[in-house]
Amino acid sequence: MDANLIEANFDGLVGPTHHFGGLGVGNLASQSHGGHVARPRAAAIQGIEKMRLVASLGVAQAILPPQQRPDLRMLQRLGLDTLGLDKFGIGGNHAQVLRAAYEASPRLLSAAWSASSMWAANAATVSSATACRDGRTHLTIANLSSSLHRSLEPAQTLKLFRRIFHDDSFVVHPPLPHCVSLRDEGAANHMRLTDRSGTRGVDIFVYGSDSLDGTKSEGANASSRFFPRQGLDASKAIARLHRLDMNSTFFLKQHPAAIDAGAFHNDVVAVSHHNIWLHHRLAYDADDATLARIEQRFAELTGEPLLRYEISNDALPLQDAVNSYLFNGQILSRRDDHSMTIICPAQVQETPAALAVVKQLIAGDGPIKDFRIVDLRESMNNGGGPACLRLRVPMSDAQWQSLPPGVRFTEPLADRLCEIVERYYPETLSLDDLLEADLIDVSRRAVHAIRQALGLQDAGPGDLLR
Image 1 (cartoon, helix red, strand yellow):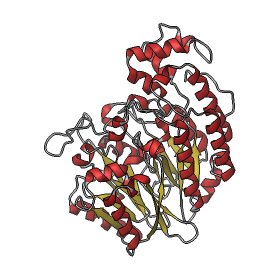
Image 2: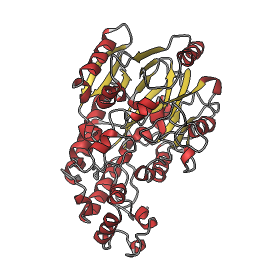
Image 3: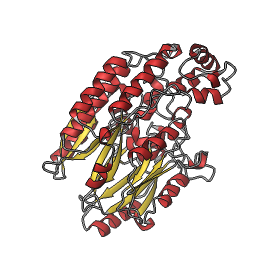
Image 4: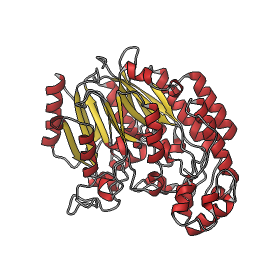
């Protein structure tokens, strides 16, 4: 393993069936925009432009393709096979199936079409090779059991990741068993705090429920409005699978106030990068002594202090934090001078308290020296900002070179993807449009073209029953 690790960002490309179904559990943006008209073409272009920005800073950037939708296999398993769905491939009377799904439940139809795999932060939990006792980089695919539409993703994600991370230096684990106590939402609830080399540090897993049956905890410290989406049992299982040192691994509970305010994942109220840990005061249900132990262990392992920035509720009200997605930004180390830049969504600029926090950060004596604004309104209206769209994978240069070359970002590749988006993606998409069978062919061709551009397509568009 090289002396220094790079933090590669794998962004999920927004899919052609991006729409507002209001399906996100505890996700206020998703729920408040349910039924609105979406703009898939604009959403995908916005995501590609964010990748351009990250790559322009000298940061390793890669691209993950959207998954094929609709998932007709799911509709079949839910009893909609009376129309002969099991015989459908590329042809067939899909319009009848879509209508049957809608009549059974509009939410079933929306789930079958969901483009939620674009939020790659939920694809897997990743542990650095320098943290794992076997010296390999471990990835566990998230089971995403909290939501029907997201539970459709893991099978395809596992197949994709085993193709991308095929080198022997990677271990790609299948999802944990699908059950309520083991529900797992991936890297959005995990942080790796390290020295500037990326090699030495501590791991923090964040969970919402610690009860044995996986339901909401009892007592005063329980969320009351929304169901927690990460279980402690799942986090501990992943730490064991990844062979982490438990003396350097910590488990923090989400503050119930954060969950109830719409912070369905830790990355809505906290962000980290190397030795920077920025979080809201109400991110964790933990006392000062617990946080101090993390700081102490970090210093013991790295020989340097952990720069923990705790933002008070007075400085940034919790609801402003959730609405602005400040903590869902990306802190990145520039390759040219190693200074840090934080990428923030446009909503930060429109929220005075959030903007003030950012300006104070870059004016201080810490390593964050710049901030950039990106417009991701289309994905954010569905509840996912800059950090939601990417999965961080710490790796060596040799590991980076071992990846299929087509997934590594280049300007020509970005241009090609924009051409595909302009050609195939609908300009607008409403829930009523999901009844149109022609959209199946459009989606299939778009995903096929994207996979070809990324060097990940060996065959034709294929059977939609997958």
